[in-house]
Length: 128
Image (cartoon, rainbow, N blue to C red; front, side):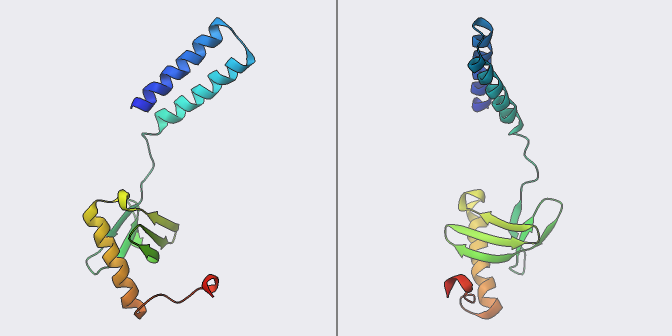
């Protein structure tokens, strides 16, 4: 909200400066600040945010509010989790989830890896 107010004030200041002393540079500043204002006002209306969770069996789920699907774990560490879904990869950071949900996701990632084949996943072509 503060960023939107500051952007609106900057756009108004650029417009006033252009009205008082028109120049090409000030006109470009008016256009740029107006564009920034439009983007700042649109920022509150985000599209469907991805949801990440763990089902009762310990499987990792990812998707939007309408559709959730099973996700496979591409990479898991205490600081970052990368999930693969049918729509692509999804990066999950610790600050994007509540602390209990993050811990549950980490446990599910470790359990999924061990359940699939025990131990670490097979080495890919980049690690050979």
